[in-house]
Structures are given as C-alpha cells and as structure tokens.
Length: 296
Image (cartoon, rainbow, N blue to C red; front, side, top):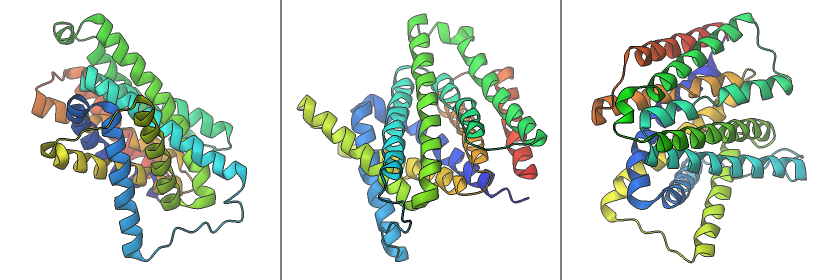
C-alpha cells in the first residue's frame, strides 16, 4: 500500500488552499482574467526554469505524442483548466471565500464517476474514504451557504451566483483533471503541465487582444501575484504527479481538501465565521484523506 497519489494530492491541497486565499485579493485588485494570465505566464516560466536546472528537455518520448488524440487531450485539459480557474477566481472575488472554495472542491463528485467509467475499480475501503471526504466537504459548504451571518453581508442573488459559478468550476476542474490524467500517460506530468500552462496563457492573450485591452499589474501587487503563480503551479503539479500512480483518482480526491485550508485562512485573517458544522466537516475531510492514504 503506497499512498503516493494521496500524498501528492494532499500537497496540492495545501498549495491550492493558500493560492485561493491570495486569489481573493488579486482578483478584486487587477481582475480575474489578468490574474489568470499572470499566473499562467509566471507558472510556465517557473516550470521551464526548473526543468532546465534539472537538465530535462521538453521531449515527447511516446510515439503517440503527435497523434490527434494525444494533442486533443492536452487541448481539453488546457481549456478546461483555464475555465475552471477563471470560474473559481470569479466566485472568490464576488462571494465569500468560505462558500466558493468548498463548493468548487466538490469536483471529485464529477471526476470519480468518470474515472470509474474509464476503468478505475475502487474497493469498499476506497469508497468509504472517498465518501467520508466528500461528506466533510459538503458539510463545510452547506454550513456556510445556510449561515445567517452571510445574509447580512451578501444578498441572496450574490450567494446564488457564487454557488452556480463554483459548481460550474467544479465540473470544469473534473474534466480538466481527467483529461490531464489521460494525457500524462502519453506525455508525462511535466510536459503535460507545461502544455496546459501554454494553452491557458494563449487563451487569455487572445482574450485581451479581442477586447483591445492591456492587463495592468501594479508593482505593489507583484509579490502577491508571484506567490499565487508559484502556489497554483505547485498545486497542479502535485495532482499531476499523483495522477501518474496506479490509483491516480485518489490524488484528485485528496487535492479537494484545499477548501479546508482556505476556510481556515479565511477564519484567521478575514474573521469569516466558522461554525460547528464546518469544523466537523474539516475533521471528516482529514479523516477521509488519512484513510484513503492508508488503504491505497
């Protein structure tokens, strides 16, 4: 029993948890699209620098690398990742962090059934661990969406829009990670990650060109944007490395715990209310991931 995919997924959860907390502020300051473009470019630069320092070349070792099916998987992963991130950043910028982050993190509810349809075969312990994790995430999301404290800060339309954006983001994240998992079998995690960053960057360069706008980044925000870029890239890379294991779908489940990190940070620094149900959900997520790692 290895637990490698779960550990990589858990490392992604920590990185993404901090990244989403930062994205709340950058999305409001420079805009969601500009934030994503910065993250794509800086993240790509960091990946290429790291590969160069390691002496790795950007090579496609598989004979399937240039087939349309393989390239189609890269495009699907890149487009879905871009859409998922934009939807998440928009939800974080407009609504409560403690609502948007947990709802988006429900993407395993979409991803695991797709993985099973593609041939994954979880056993009883795996199902139990994944169920405990998802119930924990649901408790966190439900307790926030139903809390009276939010109704005094956000009207019902804002809460509803945040939930819809977050659910759409969850579906896109599931499609992105499933596509990336299949692409990793052909290209490997590093090359897949680089391709996804390139595709995302191209999409938003085109976005700004079509709108005839130039993104503006105030120098005082650069440290925050650079930190966000590195954390987001580390999160994706953690999941991609986890997807390379036999039970790669477990990395997807473990990574969804990033919402717990974000909720705790929102409580500490923004004083967003965290009730008994939320803390119970946090405990269930931790237990679910620990069980998943133990039985993998």
